[in-house]
Image 1 (cartoon, rainbow, N blue to C red):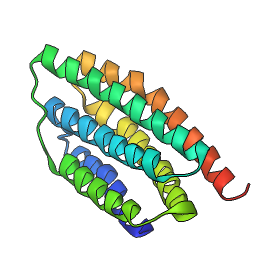
Image 2 (image 1 turned 135 degrees about the vertical axis):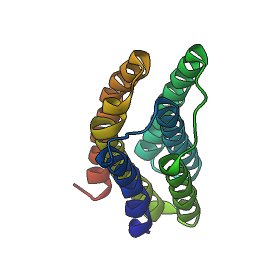
Image 3 (image 1 turned 90 degrees about the vertical axis):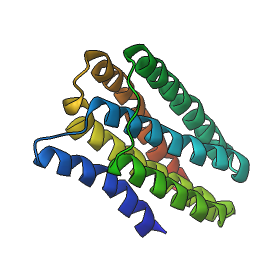
Image 4 (image 1 turned 120 degrees about the vertical axis):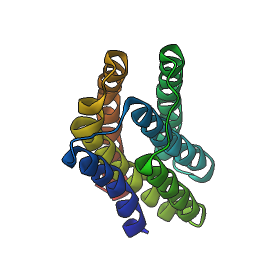
Amino acid sequence: MKAIQTVWLCALVLASHGALAHGNGPTDPQIAAIVVVANQVDIDAGKLAEQKSRTKDVQEFAKLMVTDHTAVNQSAGELVKKLKVTPEANPTSESLQQGGDKNLATLKGLSGAAFDKAYVDHEVAYHEAVIQALDTTLIPSAHNAELKALLVKVRPAFIAHLEHAKQLQERLAGG
């Protein structure tokens, strides 16, 4: 299970690095698709955790993920409409979606402490990968100033989510 999570999270980073290595990072429409899919993947996992977890801290964290990532997607949706940009599917967004689907399938097969651990471990790895992609690819590749500003604006929330997930991970481990 952890291997599946690592593979698809690395796909985001590697696809992004590969595009930069060739001097042609993702376009703004591709970045928009990556942002929307990345947020939706976390929304879907959060909704499942809200339903399946019996741990109050995990449920509260999941609810926060749903709320915050929904808000980011709403902001991104408003911006792409304003800019008249249509998000463009690309290998990175497609890989993220496939990974998100696999993660949901895995999580659906778990319950209790195993579910909580898998969900929170995934959230830590996911947010680490997204922050790396923001810093190394998405922000540097964004051409539109408003799109770049949105990415910069949401970055601190992803860092806060990562720290929250790490604290929750430690509590679940008994630390």
